[in-house]
Length: 113
Image (cartoon, rainbow, N blue to C red; front, side):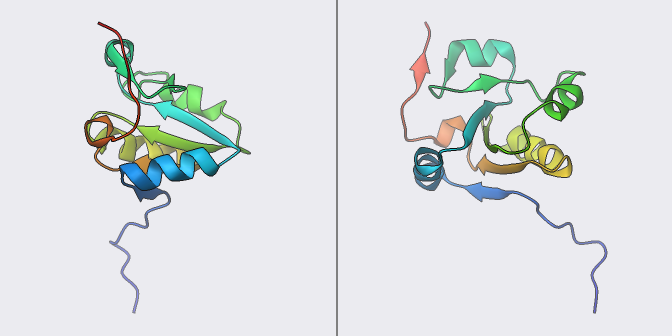
């Protein structure tokens, strides 16, 4: 009848092509990189903002995000961003997770040597 142990996913996983396509067509999108500041400085998807999911102030910072926006979230491999999406969704934010992370991203990357 009911499976109370099953978690309900409250965000959408998208692989690179679908993530990029949805991001480009969405006029209300915010691209959010949840890796460390050091990782973010070395390379990022153009237009991304950085809020490190491992920082103690992550919950406070995401609580201040605009709930009318759609958040496209990524990390290195998709694990931290999936966790971040769960947190964002629990705060009433609509989000998409880049499955496979930036290492699986086929789009443009801004690198800094």
